[in-house]
Image (cartoon, rainbow over all chains, first blue to last red; front, side, top):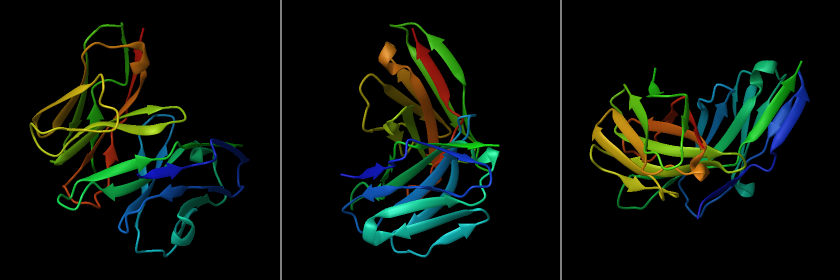
Length: 119
Length: 114
């Protein structure tokens, strides 16, 4: 069975602080994908990043960076110099294949982390 | 840009009513999904569809049904709404039935069942 755990339910920081959102996943599959989505107060989930299980290279995009460590089954997300607009719920998700016969897949979400950035 | 729209942002219904939630995507995507989101539980998959007139159960299909008569439209139906179906409902779609496809989400419908 697949599982994603985001242990931090809520995080509150002051603007310009750095913040790291943790994500730990469980799967027996050797091929899988990991995602981060942002959900602002408007409700829509916004896709941020996708990583495949064979690419452990860290990625940086502006103030966002992601640290994928297969050895610890973690895919953590860091926001540098946080801003009020970063306030949102952030979801980590794991994409695995349903079975070998089809290319269907299943996206398993973590519980989400509510990030509040105060001015 | 991928565009997934949902017919209502907010809905209030009474127990026992039949409820239709509509989702439309304008990018000719093959696959569509319905999730519900509840605090502390993340998103849970209700139903999904890989093609017109085709449907598959997700993790929590009980109390729901779906309809996909046209490729661009995927409807979630609550046959007889109950208070425990009060939730945020999110629709998503992907272009092709390939393993690595990214799901793109609509704005969500907040449903309150009284």
